[in-house]
Amino acid sequence: MQIHVENLGKKFNRDWIFRNLSTSFSANQSYAITGANGSGKSTLLQTLAGILPPTEGKLTFLQNQKTITPDEFFRYLVMATPYQELIEEFTLIETVTFHTRFKPLRKGITTKEFVELIYLPKAFHKPVKFFSSGMKQRLKLGLAFYSDTPILLLDEPTSNLDKTGVTWYNQQIAQNLHNRIVIICSNQPYEYEFCKKILHIEDAYVNVR
Ligand SMILES: Nc1ncnc2c1ncn2[C@@H]1O[C@H](COP(=O)(O)OP(=O)(O)OP(=O)(O)O)[C@@H](O)[C@H]1O
Image (cartoon, rainbow, N blue to C red; front, side, top):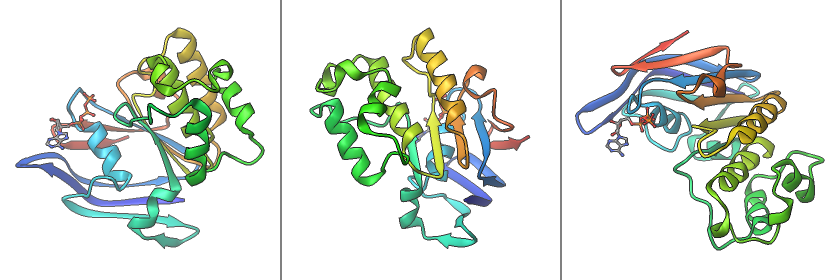
């Protein structure tokens, strides 16, 4: 899997959020998008995901040298972000069943094993509306880690997690990088220290290093 970006730019109203970004994202590589609050990290992530249309430039998705059309691209990625809502009326098991109709879990992982991996076996039949914010975050991250997709996109992955949750995040991410493009928006180095490439946004310029 590859994502190619040519002269990508996004503006809201008259303000350019980022501009002139040309780079590539490849499987088995992890990338961090960094920058101050409001610098455009989430906007860039959502543009790369095909959720926000770019204002200028070109985004190409390739799987085994074949181009994937933009309306098919969502099938190849999974995202966990603070602005993504869970369905509050669903129980944990209903949430997992619903999610996996569209994005199955990786081969060999049962629903029962999945809820153990996210440390929520006691909440199997609990409605999500009664989950704490940390429980919701573990559920979102778990669905992202264990869905069988070649692209994993995370925004502020440890928000709402306590110290144990952060340790859990670091263990889980290390086990779920293989064969994937992983892109993480963050201002917390402990969330992305394993990333070999950094895209730092400042004044609408993206410095790739
Ligand atoms: N839909 C929108 N319409 C207009 N402006 C927007 C929209 N979404 C975001 N912005 C603006 O774009 C800029 C970048 O926002 P973005 O959320 O991408 O930043 P961020 O780096 O992810 O911030 P944070 O670290 O606080 O999460 C901000 O000035 C924000 O107000």
